[in-house]
Length: 120
Image (cartoon, rainbow, N blue to C red; front, top):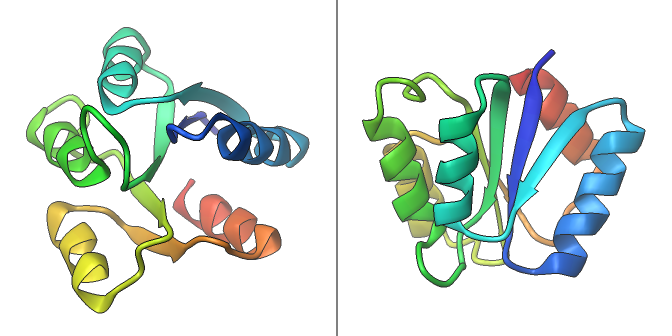
């Protein structure tokens, strides 16, 4: 099982999810922005799942997904999106960009853990 890259600009949320995943036995690295996430992906070969928020400054989640999927090194990387914005249009856009799943915040931590395990 590889490493999960968690991307969210809200430090408190990011650290809570990171702690939960770590307690669940997962290896996790985190980033607070899309550019930071791309830098991490470029420097590591062990990332097996990208979990990202949509609403972030600098580069939003849809832009991050597009950049990841456009790079041959990461094209097959599964991406799970977590967002407070849960409209059907947003969910469709996320899946069209290449994400494998979407969960609306707030969400059930056990259900989140199940989804992460399924993608890994």
